Length: 369
Image 1 (cartoon, one colour):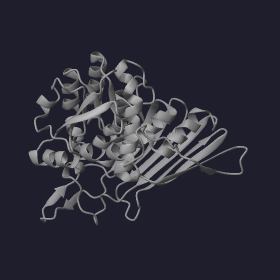
Image 2: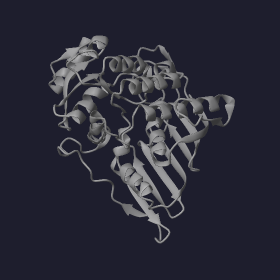
Image 3: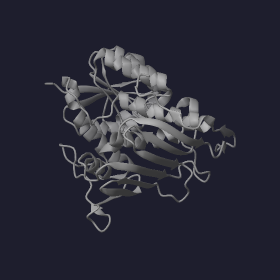
Image 4: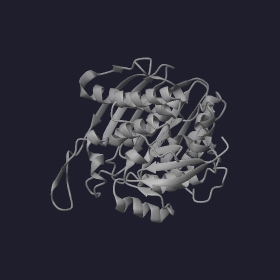
């Protein structure tokens, strides 16, 4: 790979706030063009980022011969068609999570990327958060021995009735809304990164408040989930529990993860954006603080000081650095790709089926099954 990879970003909300600075932190990439549904949105993003090559025509945009990488940062409902179009045009693809609305859509995206032999990745950048990255290294290095179980919970207040509405598509399941996909997907991916293939899921997934009033007094019907509790069995023998809610008033974006194992244990506590890692082995009197990963992008830490947007940009920049060998046809085992996105989608589908009355839902051992 001799020249810089020219990047076009479709979707300028998160795309402009997080993806542009992340790509700019990795010298091998160059963001040269932006695309959005409306001229107003893309022009605002262009003014904010200094990018002047702007478009509102995504089908033509993803086929441009001067673009090497297409990053899809649109609402979930659009991912399938846009990713397939980019792949068919011979572009390497970065796709925002969640990957798709259905297992079949996610499976088709993976199959097309594999058929075309193109690099592909999914934005599960939370793997690179300092505490999660360090915890993964502890588990992978055998520091804890054989993992037994894990418990993860996340509570935010984004959908509590006392808070203003988010974008309306987020409240509609058919558009990819809901927090099992939105908030839960990162931890599902992380649990799979730690423990391997999931084998069965049992869950309760619900919509706590089915209607919300808009500022103009009209009623928004809500069918996307805001709260979920999952039990996930892994082929490795680990059992994980995952709970999440967007209705946690005064929760402060609370986050907790703990892992028990044959030779030790660890925990991560705090918020979604600021966390503390503790760990201990059977030879220790208890859990003690462990430093999170100190890794920063090679270009430096400027602009990546933490918080939802800055933290995500730093983490995405590290994902992009680790993705670079893929463009030379080399493996990138730690980088989540469309297979990982499909794996998460299958857990979500199984959780919904379980909640609808199917009890434990077994997952086929093959991702294409």
